[in-house]
Length: 474
Image 1 (cartoon, rainbow, N blue to C red):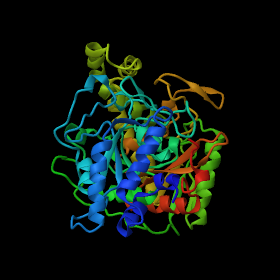
Image 2 (tube, one colour; image 1 turned 30 degrees about the vertical axis):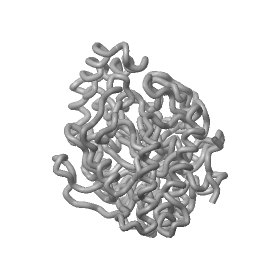
Image 3 (tube, rainbow, N blue to C red; image 1 turned 60 degrees about the horizontal axis):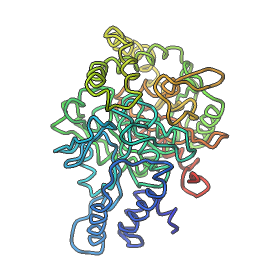
Image 4 (cartoon, helix red, strand yellow; image 1 turned 45 degrees about the vertical axis):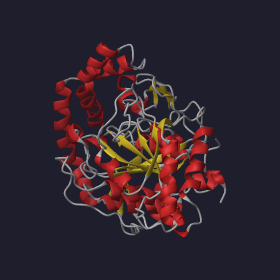
């Protein structure tokens, strides 16, 4: 196995090889650390690093697999990178901001606690924009993270560091958070897998448990690894009033899709989609047809207002906090933060109230009936992946002859508004310019397994990152 193959190994394959001792946790971790150091000045996906303590844990895992008697969990020795927005006991959580540069948590978020309890080897924090509030990943505290597929292009945000690290072969698994697409959009930008579980499936801490658009979830290179992580991260927790009481175990393999009915829309009747993304979405849909699914285009003429208010409803909720941060810490925040506050202040409480009414109308009149007829709904994740790595929220770039912001190219917020629907983001292909494209597979409320069935069927017919020619040239 070459060093490149080792850095791109899946978590499931690594766990198997740890047990038959054909590779060791130390060997894998050292390969990833070497890759991380090699791409530090180009991709730059990591913030804080814990390499020395991770090596000690890797040695203990290696001893366990050699028969020391220590129990090895399902993720024992698997290198894990955690987004700089999730709490880890005893570690700094800066949330991409100099404002929080000295903040150390005294407890871990439930999902992180579970991953570490399963033996995952935390070795780094991944970068995020300030307060997780951009579709690019840049901040004063961490600098700029670039897309491994092309320097100067955004890896997405706000979980851009996690997605970039995976695509670059610098971690085995990673975590993210998603309130308007912040797992799925970076997954699409970088050509990896991201999962937004139904709201409440993966428990959230404290006040976040009432942030109905917000989800924690896994980012991985394979559908099976996303299922593995989701199974560990999910389940009720007494700290989360809204955590779902039932547990769903996603099987491996999740099952075929013969006979499944899948609806599809390339533009949701709202987005300006470039030709390459439309082409690769169609190719992915054809692959699903080849796997036995019935795939049908459905007309969408009802999504525009819901999409606008989905963004606005979240912006207005953050406005007061942003205003206070800018007033008190204007000398510390990144240059783009005042613009974030300006955008947030442009929406009103009336927009939030209207967003709730529109959500009810759209589900009652359109999405509810759609999911009564179809098992899943497929759309692109990003309408144009060629966005600058240093763009601000109001900056524009050209899409089909129009000037649009990156917010207007992320086709994700609708599924935060309808957060009980599971959404799996998976690679769909490549643009002619060599950037990944992706689709999002949306399931009926709380039907987690269905989206993994569709994702696994697509991966089997259109694999990604499994061979050197399908990996970025770093």
